[in-house]
Image 1 (tube, helix red, strand yellow):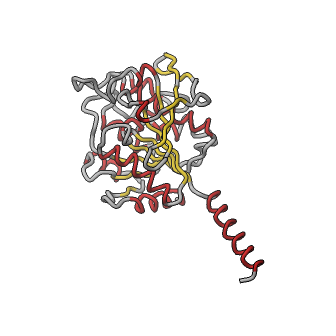
Image 2: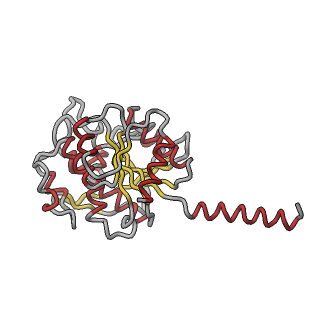
Image 3: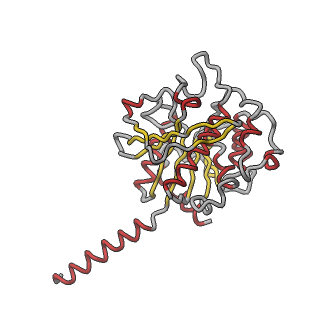
Length: 291
């Protein structure tokens, strides 16, 4: 090949790579758990492995999780992102400062954003229940704070995800907000929401005020009339499914009633893909984006 031919071959190859990078679809992962920051469970493994596999398949990703009280900030090398922190979120008529921290998973260098707050996360020794196994009475408020904290931060990042994938009941409020309160925001106007179903993790219910506290902008009380006043794992799952564009059976052993509820909707539902799940999720994302 001539020198000119080699030049143009390299040029067009690099140009094609640039176009592919620009056109890369974006997936926002909103996770309840991610290893190595919290103990290993089926959900925390998925919180780490799924973004890794999705990124290796050519997607651009962002990953969020709560800054649980049992996370060792020094060992995990978390540090606060000042330019993203500082906003106050009003929940139950109280201002709650939003603190954003970030770290990179050592083995993959994937960056994780952490949603933090003194009252909701930093001062708790555990994740969702105290040492005696009693679930925190304000878990519902914590889920609301987490959902709004993630969405407000993504807005600040000026990032526009094609897919928003919610994993864990702590992210169950996100689909409602994306389709209502944040629907007109440029970052989310065209986003498709995917909810993963795992085994039940809530033993009891959320506080009686959850339905009132979740109301925000166009996420109105009218939209919540069809749900029980007492929210539990099933009711949270129904809320997430109702405002999602697609559902994933992320575990072989999920709540059968909730899975049946999802399959009764006019939604794409991906059955449990097994251990070799990477390509299955990527193809599912592509299908959802095209619909």
